[in-house]
Image 1: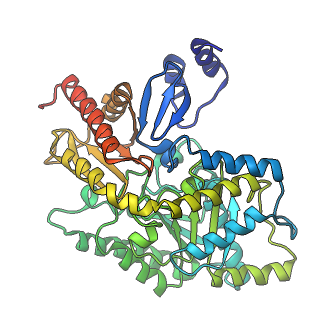
Image 2 (image 1 turned 135 degrees about the horizontal axis):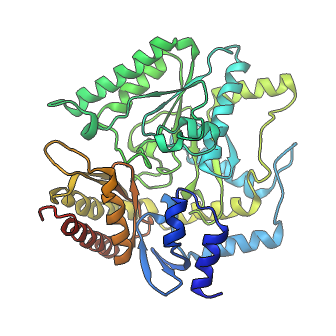
Image 3 (image 1 turned 30 degrees about the vertical axis):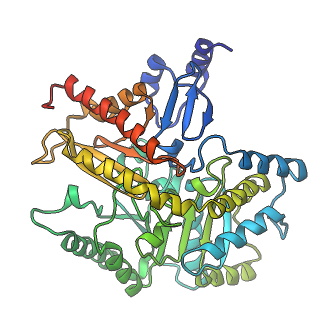
Length: 457
């Protein structure tokens, strides 16, 4: 099939996620055909540094042969089996064991799903099931954060604190609450230190709990670094103060490690980077380097004992997916975790992250950049029309998308988010040379758009 016919077929038959369907009919897709290291190539042979690792996920790059072989071996041995009704298979068992043992805080059991959204939806159901089991049927409300992102299934999208994920979908559902977004740059008051801002964020959370009644609040969801909401790194002392409030009111803490897990922040888990002590952890994306869909929910012993007792009482834990712990996906995840250990991926990240963060922070001097922020191998720049007032560009100017489109023309794929925030999340195997290439191409794009809109250079 020719490139033009592929594009025509795509426009005719495919409905794309997170895409303006009207605009897509005019522009058509960029069609990727192969990958090599941190690069992907389109159907015209042009190469792009994948500055987002796909969707924050392709940690080992786009042509890791060991993952291909792991899938092939498992396909030949046992292409499908399940873990329903006392059934099991070795890849699922081994992956459960590895994840529970490598968790940064004591965990008891692993449950498998197919995406981060499913993992967070599953966590919601577990939380409700658990509180029924322990005789607290009124303790069901769940708090997430404005601009937090937890997925797009019905419950996960309700947790997500972004208007685009609610508008026209009749979301959020009831029993889902949102507290303040801990972005010091955007929401801090004049002269307010990060620590004082964290105090205010904690006070906001406690006030919400008191208004609703602590006996009605079941859990709190948080990403260690807020990803799709703008790569928001928590202010100093924030999680220390938040966790104290959760403990005081007997509220479960769910750490959404879907983006942050497996090295992204410079530790194996974001919970380690920021000192989190969750009761439940959700993870996906880099669990298999995104080569096959798989996600996991880890629960601690307290949550497990509640679920265990209820299954004994009513006969079953009536939840699961056909592809939970799919043996091929689990085999690829097992091999991915082996590679992380054998190649010391955390050591590599810690070695190259300073270069990425230095190049990122240097962008703060650019006339369009209000804030450059990040940690490890994740970061973002927030574009503003006035540095002093932090005023955003008019959305009709589409400055962020224009910069990202120009960057793609320059050979680097990035992501523009609401508020003209541009994210960086390259494959974890990226080198310092490739980091420089990525930022060189991005800076060229930023300067091009600066000139186009007539902003001072």
